[in-house]
Every structure is written in C-alpha cells, then in structure tokens.
Amino acid sequence: MPKRGYHHGNLKEALVNGCLKLIEAKGPTGFTLSEAAREAGVTPAAVYRHFEGREDLIAEAARQGYEIFGDLMEHAYDKGQPSALSAFESTGRAYLAFARKFPGHYVAMFESGISINRNPELNAAATRALGVLEKAAEDLSQHIPADKRPPPAMFSAHIWALSHGVVELFARGSPGTISPYPPEDLLETGIGVYLRGLGLISPDA
Image (cartoon, rainbow, N blue to C red; front, side, top):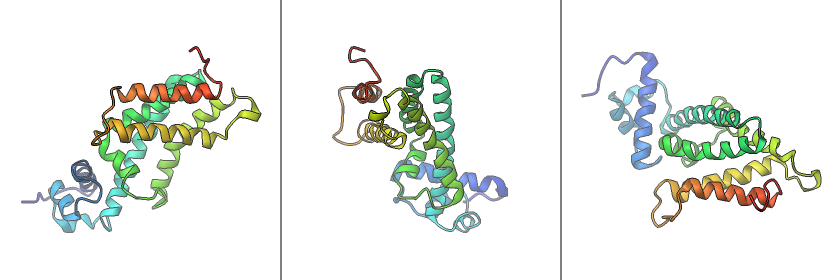
C-alpha cells in the first residue's frame, strides 16, 4: 500500500530518490512515473504535485546532481591550490569519483537526454559545476606561450571528454570494455600525455 501523509517538503525528495534508484536499475528511459511513485511509496497522482512528467523528474535529479558535482569540483580545485597543475589534475579525478559515488545522478545529468537548458535552475547548477573545470584549465593555460595556448573552453572540453570516456568505458562496468588498468590510472596517465603535449609537464616527469 502506498504510504500516506508525506509532508509537502519531503514528497518531492522521496520521488527524486525513487527516480535515482530506478535510473540505476533500469536506465533513464526504463521506468514510468507510476514506478517512480511506487518506489517512493506514494500514489501516481502524487507525482503531479511537483512534476509534469518523467522528464521533469529526471531533470530535478540532474539538477541535484550538478549541485553535488559542483561542490565536489570546487573542493577539488581548492584542494589543489596554489598549484594550477595540481588543481587541474584534482578536478579530473573528482569527475571520476563523482561518477562512481553518484551513478544515478551521473546518468540523469549526462545520459538521459535532458538538456541543461530545460529550466533556469538546472542551467545555473550545470554552468557552475562545469565552470570549475574551465577555470582550472584557464589558470593552467597561462603557463603556455600565448601563440600555443588553446582557448580555455577547448582545453577543459578535451579533459572533460577524456574523463567522460574513461568513466563510460571503464568505470561503469560496460560490457566488453574491461581494462587491465584501474580507471584512475587510465585517467591520470591520459591527462599526463595531454599536458606533456602542451609542454606543461616535463617529458621526463
């Protein structure tokens, strides 16, 4: 029997938590709103008090994920200071750590097809989180001669793509993509190769 008596403030959170469990189990398109309601212990009609449909529910899960992600990225960036190199490498590791610890949020954010422009709150959370990586790249790029310096947005996009690829292929148990090396090592060495190519790390380091 669905539970009754949820207060207005925690019904929404219960639904998001139910959504996250279903995303982890079935993927972002593998469940219905009724299943999310059942997972949260409420009637299907209760969902519509807060969400117009499944995509709105997933968008809220993504927004919460970007808030957590942004906090982790900022902490990683601050922890690496005052070295621009250390701060940059730290944000890359934080990406992998987030994907491991918050798989439901990660999928809602990056694999659900939900645009970060769906609503202003989601856009603001995503912009803040992804902006940390770009800031770290901008700091580090100042150590590259101006004529060889990639734009910070390109610099951070390269590392984001590398981090995302390692997560997708080797950190989330994708079939047929078992690596003999830990994902952390793959990411660390990949970033190292990239930074050596830009002259930011000594070839002998």
